[in-house]
Amino acid sequence: MALRRTGLGKGLDALLQPEEEAPFLGGESAIPLDRLRPNPEQPRKHFGEDELKELADSIREHGIIEPIIAEEAGDGFYTIIAGERRYRAALLAGLKEAPVLLRSYPPEARLEIALIENIQRTDLNPIEEAQAYKKLMELTGLSQDSVAAKVGKNRSTVANAIRLLRLPEEMQDALIRGEISSGHARAILHAAKDEDRETLFREIREGGLSVREAERKAGELNGDGDAPPPESSAAAAPKTRKEAPERGRRPAELTNMEEKLIEKFGTKVSVQGTLEKGSIRIDYYSMDDLGRVYDIFLGN
Image 1 (cartoon, helix red, strand yellow):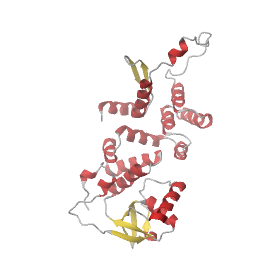
Image 2 (tube, rainbow, N blue to C red):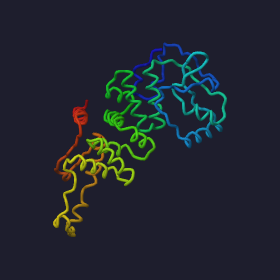
Image 3 (tube, rainbow, N blue to C red):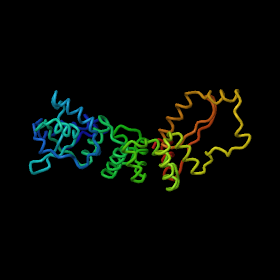
Image 4 (cartoon, helix red, strand yellow):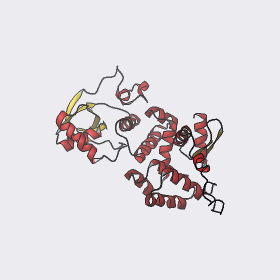
């Protein structure tokens, strides 16, 4: 069945809508849950127990309001395209069957639908999201720009997500479990050497470093001049009362802009100066980093 191409990138409802002239494979049907199978390409691998219990309670009281989308898999079974959370919650609620809309999509559309559903309705963890973007690129041959347009994200968001897959498995697992944040993960990737990344990872987990502290530490490990100068009698001297308030007078607008630039470029960004004049420093730690920053500047 042909898809309405104008639906791509415009949300799940648009993507699920088939061509008007193409016949539906079937309207809403009640299908036994034991005949439904999860989609092996489902980006989401972890489903929160509390979240499923809440949904199961709602299903017991109100039923499944929105049908599951599935396609025939043969031998009387059906593969879920969208709605695996509802399927799992229905099992938990003790239901025997669920309302299902039968559809048929090409492989890239199945993955796109599963990805969009999770992003729009229930966030994937950072690694699941990165793996989904990468899989969609591999399956379709699309660029990061095209994938970003399909799922309604900025290119930098997709690029930053995919970079997380460069982390060792142990660090990816820590990110999945919430032991470190995506910001921490990007700071770890800023460290140029593998051993420095290991060091920084341990310090984040054991020392409770903030993202900004982790970024600063990555700079120190890289020897890029961000490390504080060694203490001398002058450096160790206490600040005067006049100096202290000067440090606290940085406009909040600059701090907010700096944070947004860090998120945009996915690397360390420093804004120095005032609202009237100053400079912006953007760090990169590999040719990949430089190329990505260059592409963002050019709007590629």
